[in-house]
Image (cartoon, rainbow, N blue to C red; front, top):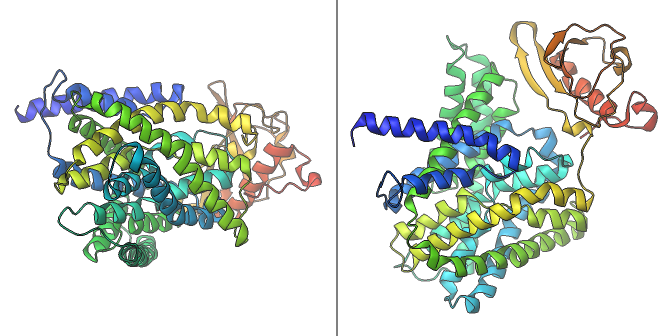
Length: 502
């Protein structure tokens, strides 16, 4: 096919994928399922009959796409929201991954008649939760900030150790690595990757604040270039590029940068494009004629993963956190964390590593992982809101539900906050003056039923209102906390001891 035909096909796929996001949003399904379906439709058995079986190329492109997705995750993660959750997330991303791999390997070795190496490899491939799937589903759920923070941070951190283990187990000519080899290599790669990310992130934030670029559009490009600098720099040192890029962008995203809103918007668009391209490519890589043979072993492995390995890893981590007094995770939260360990592109990309290295039986592993991702994402994703309500951990109506976006007004050194009042919020019926915002903050506009107006001090707020609040940068956190407190406890929030803290 000529270049124009490829461009036409690519444009149709991207537009179709964008339209499908609305369908996915309404049904609660991660959009990755639709993208994988598009890949199957244009693949060797689809209408375009595109024959793509280059596992090595898919692996390289997949890792780059995951780096972009992780960069967006770091840039859009609010450090104040996840700070308390980081210790628990780190434990789940390290100890939890190890427990999950071992428990899974022990269970499936006899169940699927696999040797130890292949059992451990399949367990490592499936041990990582997927950042794209977690971000797309959980950021729409009304969860307590700490619980949501654990899931988001875990999905950002656990890619790194799983990549290390999968890579070590995928070398067909090398002997089976010992536990000591895996521990030493993992420690080195994670430590050096963390150092690279923690070094590049603050330096990049410092320079971007002080270098006046001639065009605002250059800032987002510079930030994404820094993300790839962290990723490739760590990889060149044989360290974890995923951990480096996530930490670097987490620091940059929580720094006061020029055109921060535009940078985050650009990163979000790049991540969506990376997701679309990644999942469509993985769908094309799969062979529909081979998938039926993988259904039974894939379903068995998925059941072991979801009902045994993941819950056991969460339980062990919760026990360790309680014994060390780092954190306390209730049994309800453990149940939700176990079910919310969504798999997506990461396991499928990891399954291409042994395939690209020529490991015997690796194509079968890829097919089984493909089945697991499709089936269990279809089962788990839409049921998460129901499970949250059933367990009594849903945070509907609380201030954490407020959709807040900040657009820095550079010359005035002020922030513009966009606040949506969710249904059930106790901010409904509160008059503007009863918000008791600081003197250097004001509600400047209300959008109600598609009509915008400037409110007075006695204007009553209503559910579904969107407020524009202007505040100085120094008072932004105080303003957000006050809005959260009123949303949660009403205009007398202070009397109830509610301060709107995360």
